[in-house]
Structures are given as C-alpha cells and as structure tokens.
Image 1 (cartoon, rainbow, N blue to C red):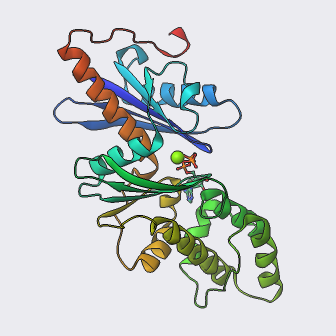
Image 2: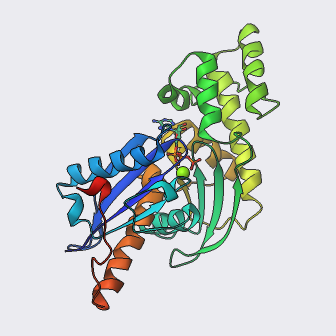
Length: 279
Ligand SMILES: Nc1ncnc2c1ncn2[C@@H]1O[C@H](COP(=O)(O)OP(=O)(O)OP(=O)(O)O)[C@@H](O)[C@H]1O
Ligand SMILES: [Mg+2]
C-alpha cells in the first residue's frame, strides 16, 4: 500500500489530506487549521493532525506535495505544485466530469477550464481585490454581527434582496450599515451581498468557456447561500463535493501518489523522503 499526502497552505486556511491506493485510490483523513502568521507551523500542524487521524506515522507517508500560496514554506514537502494544477486534478477526481472549476478561497477566486483527464486548459484569477472571496463574506458577517456559519443560511431566507452597488470591501461596510439604518432585514442584505459576489465571480469566469460540469471548490463552497447564488447567475447546477475545501490538497495528494508510482517503478521509492520536524 502506498501512502501519500497533499498539503494546501492557503492564505486563510491550511488543508492536509492523506491518501492511499490500497483497494482503489481513497482519502484516509483530512485536517484543517487556520494558516495564521506562522505558515510553516500551520503546514506541520495540519500534516501531523492528518497523519494522526489516518492512523499512520509521518514516516509512512512516502511523498508529500505542497500547494497553495505558502507551499514554498513547507519544510517537509518533497515537491510543490501550483494551486491551479492541484484544484483541476482534485476536482476531476472528486467530481468526475468536471470541465470548469470555480474556486473561491479566503483571498482570491479563480476559474479553471479542465480537460478530460484533469489537466488545466486555461484559467483566470482575481487576486488583486477581496471582492468575490471569503474575506468579503467574513467582513460582511462581522459588520452585521453574525458568525460566518450563519451568513449563507440567512441569505437563503431573503425575500427582497437589496442592491449592493459596490463589491469593494472598503465600501460594502457603509452600504450594509445604511441598509440596516433603513430597516432592511439581515436576510435581504445578505441576499444582496451574495448576489453581488456571484455576479462578480461569473464575470471573471466568463473570460473562459464555461463548460459543464461546473465544480465549485474552496472554503466558500461550504456556504450554501453562495452556492445557490452562483447557480442562479450561472443558470445551472454545480457539483459541490463534501470535500470542496480540500480539493487542492486532494489534487496534491494524487500527484504525490503518482510520484510514488513513478519512483517505485524506477526503483528509487522513498529516496529523499523527509518528515516534518525530523520525527
Ligand atoms: N463553514 C463555513 N461557512 C462559510 N464559509 C466558510 C466556512 N468555512 C470556511 N469558509 C470560508 O472559506 C474561506 C477559506 O477558504 P479556503 O480554505 O479555500 O481559502 P484559502 O485556500 O486559505 O485561500 P486562498 O485560496 O485565497 O489562498 C474563509 O475565508 C471563509 O470565508
Ligand atoms: Mg486556496
């Protein structure tokens, strides 16, 4: 049995998965930690927690692929790959038939055209501004004094969603406050916020050919309101795996399993393998 791991060090949250190819390729365990200021430490914590959950020693993990914005800070990783490549690979595995990925993370959003074997055909990215990202939704929740978990479900109860004129995080706060002062309900304000972000994300994705199946990935896919709003503006359903936030890490782990296969075949299996913190 070969065991490999993928660690996706995102700007906001760090995800690790341990996978094996014993009786079919599968995810053994997943772990999620906040990235925080110490990126290297977050990667180690996620990896260690994941190994523990999977019931394996870190030394049993034959290959680790790092991805995400902090991938070069993973001291124990064997190699790094870009988030785009890993999201395409992971989405194709978890949601077969994926041809378009919409990834909404903490600080950026991306759309990726994916080929039949999970390869990247094209991509577009918005990393200049928080609009259309988890940070925007987190800011909105904060202004309204509610938790992030409540944002999506509340937005689904909107009857008359307000119009949000700007999707700039700097200005949305005053938009929200003025709607609150006008007596608009939290549901209607959040409904408007979700629609504004969905439209913004669609205008990014439209720079590609949006082919079905469309798969949503990233932590924002855990927000049911955002999934619904995007489906409304897209005019069709998306695929959303229960592991949506782990898609990049799953893609990285799949590449790690492939590396083990190649190394095994060429007789250099486990060579150069290192574990975090030397244990
Ligand atoms: N339970 C939840 N409900 C709603 N939103 C959530 C939930 N959990 C996480 N999120 C959102 O997901 C975001 C993190 O997603 P993700 O882990 O994909 O980001 P990241 O990979 O760190 O960021 P990036 O890809 O931009 O570097 C958070 O900012 C938060 O807004
Ligand atoms: Mg990410």
